[in-house]
Image (cartoon, rainbow, N blue to C red):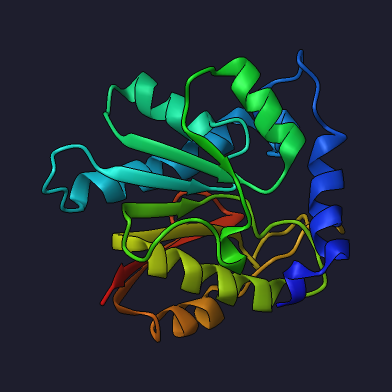
Length: 210
């Protein structure tokens, strides 16, 4: 996955930074279809967290591609405490996130290309929507991303993807075959859960690290 090439990173940065508007709803800035679909994806993660061990009481969560930190807001609204860290590649998005939500722990980094975190640093790692933008190398990008998410997670690595069964497809998006990603995820963890029942155009992979 040559995401480290400037052209790929610039493509991601340009796509999202041109959508930034202080008066624009956060889900729309991040190119989600609706707020409801965004929340549906978050609820899958919440279910995973409720079923995952957290010996310290409050789970540590790394939100990769955190955008405007809507996930953290979701947990607050659900009154589900987490020790949250958001990381994103796009400087303008993080600037807007800090403006909207001062005080949240945010890091600018490419965690799929090394990143500042150590192995097993977080109870759960999460990645929502990061693999949706058509880059021309999405399958390799997804494999590298799942490997990194699993490396940073103690208990669960969770990522969602657009489903190949989707009827209405957009040219700027990439759609995945869940069976292919599931097979790869099996090489990374001791157990893999595939969740496909929450949205017609989406699926989530949950990896239990070894």
